[in-house]
Length: 143
Picture 1: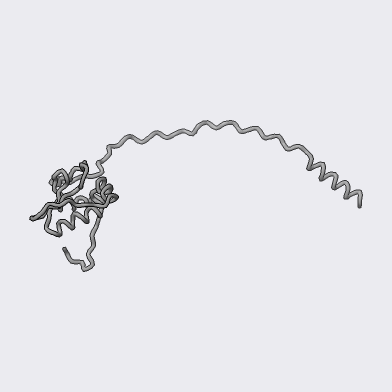
Picture 2 (picture 1 turned 90 degrees about the vertical axis):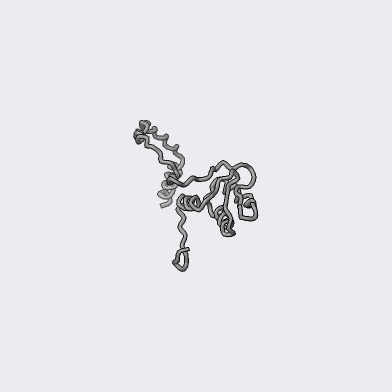
């Protein structure tokens, strides 16, 4: 029994001392995948299609205030916080920009860009359409 155990221990030790198998040869390289042909070029539709009769103000704002509120008595610049002003220079249709213009109109004023172009309610409606803004009223009535 002792001899059998010694033989088993020697067999385990010899098996553990063997060299590792050599690495298997790498498989043959595969040909590069075939790339499907690109679809034919299509015409790109403009991002904003303005209906006839509505002229959007230029987005090329000069330095200084973006909008001017003109009432019967005074002409004042609409001031924005610097971060909001940067946003409004790129996207005048956004809510914070529209809020200040609406506040001017609520006082009976008219809104003009720094270049003198009027921002009418038709322009505001077009801005709403561009961003697909829908306004709901709690009472369901018309304003």
